[in-house]
Length: 210
Image (cartoon, rainbow, N blue to C red; front, side, top):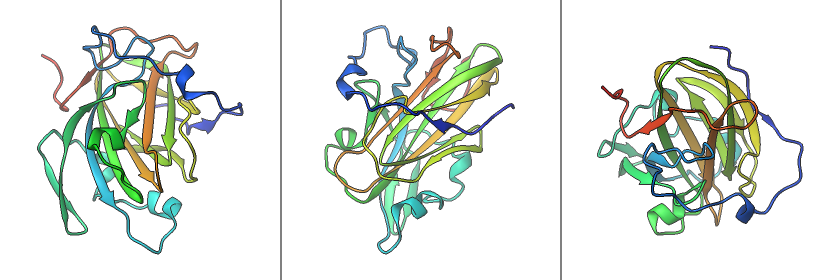
């Protein structure tokens, strides 16, 4: 599969406003003109247990079998006695804002967003760029490829790495934990030069388009 771990960029923080833009009317594929994933299936908020560092909790499954999750809207799961339902969400900008989607502030909480990326052909050398506020862990087609265990503000494209998309459905499971205040995540897919990949679609279910 030619996967290598993502590595942090050694670059200065940029203003978030310089990276965001409004959703265009033609963003129906669920991925925008710059390659940012806009459509997700979300499970949140999951209350985090007290007494353990958030970075440690990131490395533990908060939902059983989290690496291989393939949910659809309406699926339900019980976590620490609380029943939650997966739901379809769409990011208004090039990052996902959990608090905005939930219409509430959620300190010391965790959540998942899942994207089903349909590729028209096998595509090597795909650059994956991610950002999170706070901790983030990314699974790609069931493989753990990335983890950031410290608290931080969101910088989109903060960390980058290379994967190979297979023809058909590719599953990205992004777990993001929030210590306090803002709670966000970004995922971008481009070629190695930073150009968008033609023909990609982000589906709402793991079922390929006929």
